[in-house]
Every structure is written in C-alpha cells, then in structure tokens.
Amino acid sequence: MSGEQILIFYYTFQRKEGGKCGHFSLSALRERNQMKSKHIFLGALVLFNTIAFGALFYFVCTKADYSLNQKEDSYLIGASYMTMNNEFYKIVNEEISARVEAEGDRFILRDPALDARRQIEQIEQMLEEGIDVLVVTPVDWESLTSVLERARKEGVRIIVADTNVQDDRLADCTITSDNYNAGTLVGEYFLSQKKEAKLIIMTHDTTKSGQDRVQGFLDTVSGHEGIEIVRRIECEGQTEIAMPRLQAAIAQGDKFDNVFCLNDLASVGVAAALEENGMLDSVDVYGVDASPDSKGLIKEEMMQASAAQFPTEIGGQIAEAIYKLLAGEKTEKDVLVPVELITRENVEEFGIDRWQ
Image 1 (spheres, rainbow, N blue to C red):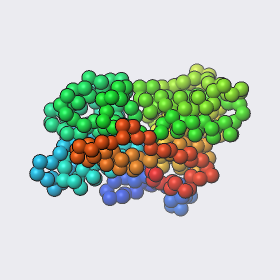
Image 2 (cartoon, helix red, strand yellow; image 1 turned 120 degrees about the horizontal axis):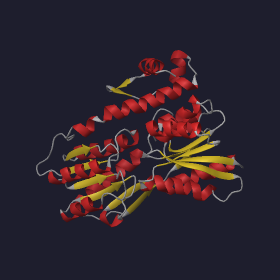
Image 3 (tube, rainbow, N blue to C red; image 1 turned 30 degrees about the vertical axis):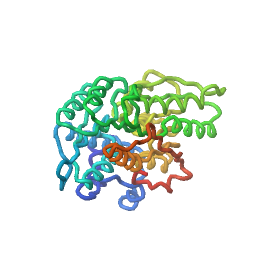
Image 4 (cartoon, rainbow, N blue to C red; image 1 turned 45 degrees about the horizontal axis):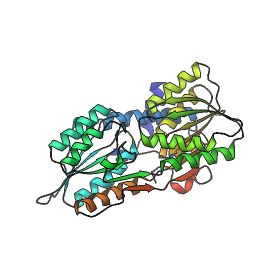
C-alpha cells in the first residue's frame, strides 16, 4: 500500500471526539465505504501509530501542568511513563490526572520517548521542581536505581506502574497487570489450536513486563513436541520497529508459521509485515494488550488472540495509592491486576473500538 493510499484512508475515516482523533471501528468503516481490504486496514493501523507518536511527542517538549483550581499547599505529582505513543499509557494517565485535579493538586507529565537517559534526566528535573509523588514506568528496568534512591532520600513517594524496577525496595507500591499470566493465557490458547508450530517471538527485553509476558508464554509452550522457537526479535514493543525487523527476518529466509508478540503495538507491525509479504493467511499472530487495533484484527480473523489489560483500572488504583501514601497510610507493596483472554469467540463482549 502506497503512502498516498494510507493518507487517503486516514483522512476519509478519522473521526473527531472532543477535538481529538478517535479510534475507528471496523463496522463503521463498512457502513461508510464498504471497504474490506485487509491491506488498507493494516496500512491505516501502522499510520495511526506513527501519527500518534508524533502528536504525543508534544509532551517531551512541553512542561504542562494539568491541574486547575489548585488548593493552598497543594501536592505536586509527577509522572514519567516509558512512552506516550501508546494509548494504554494515555488512559492510565487520564485516570490519575483527573483524580489529582479533583483533589486540587498539581500534576506534571514527562515523556522520555523510550530513551532511558532522558527519563533519568526528566525525573531529576521533577525532583528539582519539588514533586511529592513520582509515578514511573521504567524505559529500562535496570536504569533507575540511582535516581530513585535520590527520590527516596528527598522524601518522595514512588509508585511504579505497569512494569517493575529492578530494585523493588525503592518503590512504595508497584501496580502492574499480571504479565506472566498474560503470556500463560495466550500460550494455553495457542496449544489448544496448534500441535506443531514454528514460532517467532517479538520481545522487549529491557522491560520486566515484556520479559514476564514472553516467559509466561514460553514456559507454557516449551517442551511440547512439534513446537519450535525459530527466532527471538527485539522490537521494543513498537509498531514501527516490529514491522521492518520481521520483514528482515522474512527476507533472510526464516521459516515460521506463528508469531507471539509481547504487546499489540508489535502485533500491528507484525500483521502489516505479513500482509506486505502475502503471508497473513498462513501465519497466525498472538499478542498482549487487547488494544482496539488488535481487537479489530481479531474480529477480522487477521490475528488469533490477545490477553487483555485494563488501563482504566490500573490508573484508578494508582490514583488511590497516591492519596493513601500522601495521607500516611499503607498500601499494598505489589498489586497485580488480572488479565483476560480475548479471541474471536468473545471479542465483541469487550468492545472493538475502545480499551477495556
């Protein structure tokens, strides 16, 4: 699909929700244009992820303070997720910032854009600005020890979100999806569908969440006769990295018939690479997240399954933990939010065009 075709598709089907571009639904696309081309659909998903990255890069360059009606002696809450080009983090952040604003406190967000060094620098800047609580999703789970030690010495409460830091003692609370079980659920479903398979595994090895999902899947499927791991491909959980790296593996002659992806940004890139090479009908794709994009792929039989995360619940639990810590109350040290398996049989129950 050419760049011109992708742009025509995008400008034809984008819709506005409160001034922001929202996710499209496959049923709406059919009603408007009766267009069923898988190739166009995948091209649009890749384009949307690329545009989202550029738009949300705004947060790197601005120092927005989202709070209104601030109270006297208000608290300052700082947040740094690994990237803001993932809708998952946007939803988590909306839950937290809404609660902070309702409490009359102040909230600042920094986007390291998958740069571990930048994340450290941005956290240091927030410490200089006097934050009382830090919410952080590490780009590299091993990289933040020194800056988090500094934060604790300065009396800052630390909540780790979505994926662990290497030294969990530095966190007052860690709130994540049950990432290992996400991989396990997908692995169990995979085994129910396959007796033999040649697998490629798309990874993000610098994050504990990515490691746990992959390990849960591998622990479930490994040791079964007929299941072969052909290659692991590092893709940083990003569409624009997963697509060309899988294309490179195809060009090098790798023979495979199934792909497990640590998240659904990677799944979209994988599906696009397969479609471009005429392989989507012969290779099955599995992922984790159950993003609107991947649920659309599942419904259209272009992807087999995904383990659903619940970003609204995660954000709500983080917000609750923030105010317990500020009140001097204890929180659970580690919170695992359950995940659920989504397949073609139940995808409609979760809503195609929105997160859970």
